[in-house]
Amino acid sequence: MIIHQEDFYAYATLSLNPEELRASVKKSLGIEWDPITVGDAFSGQVTFVGIYDGHGGSAVSQYLRQELHGIFESAHKEAIPELFAWAKELGGYFRRFKGGALAPWVSNTQNTPPLDLEARATQAFFEVDRNLSSDPVSQSCGATASVVLLHSLDAPATPFFASEQLVLTVAHCGDTRVLLCSVDSGRSVPMTETHHADAPVESIRLRRMMGASLITDSFGESSLGDLRFKKFGVTPEPQVQTKLLNGPKFMSSFCIQCPHEQSPGKDWAYIVLVSDGVSSILSDSEVVDLARGARDPKAAAEAILSFAQELGGEDNATAIVVPLAGWGLITGPDSTKDLREYRKQQAVGSERQRRM
Image 1 (cartoon, rainbow, N blue to C red):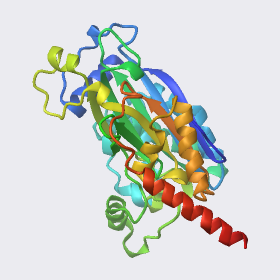
Image 2 (image 1 turned 90 degrees about the vertical axis):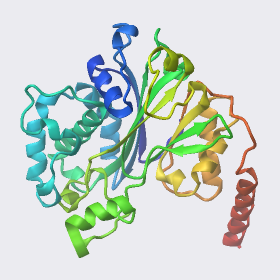
Image 3 (image 1 turned 90 degrees about the horizontal axis):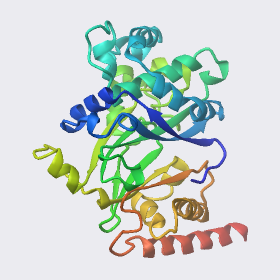
């Protein structure tokens, strides 16, 4: 991991309710998973990796580094009705807010299902904004965030970087980026979409609320903090995606008939998280290709950041590389090597001209 300026990150191991994880696996992937097969000590264990890109100052991104994983772990459904009432009081855009992933719990929590990871992430992101709402600095200071959650289904339990039965969940708000890299040819698979006002999903959402008054800002239209802009549609509500990185053992033992795409655990080499100081300069393919062949994840992150800086990157820049079971096994050629060399030569020429 390499980080600069207003960018921050966090890594933590969470202990969550195994029944909640069972519900999440069932809802997202259609799998009947039994936590008992893993054992009490590890069935609720989830690895948390977060990347936070601040704007207007570092106060909110620092708060996320220190607090978001704890807020995520301690979230409980009984707090949702009060949180929902607070969100409605923001007015403007949130007068029409129905609760999103929190909808089953906004009016009553008795006789309701356990939280799933999407609901927990949504609650945690909103709790951040409520906690910051009394801080004057957070009225015009904010941060984008991407959180990677890794939950192994292996029995007996194995760490995420060796797991053949791994559930990857990404909760995302803003323009930080999460990429999954395949072992086969080093293909990049984006797990996030950029939440700017000119992105199709965001444009539809905001124009429905704001019409002709829609104004695009550099920090996008989804962020944590930025409290004075909330009523205009700047929401902390995360986009949540889940993918199963699935090994052959799991298929034969637990999932004879699963309705989703199967992916052997060692088909995936690593996950890369980057801030827009990297993604605004490098393509997804360039990012994952720069990490291939590195001796360890730290060296992979250094290679990504170094190349972005060589091309003239001046924004806050962060790169985090998370190894998976296929680390070091990527096959096929480096598809962007020639392009990167060309871009590097062009950048050197431009710098010489600038200094003349």
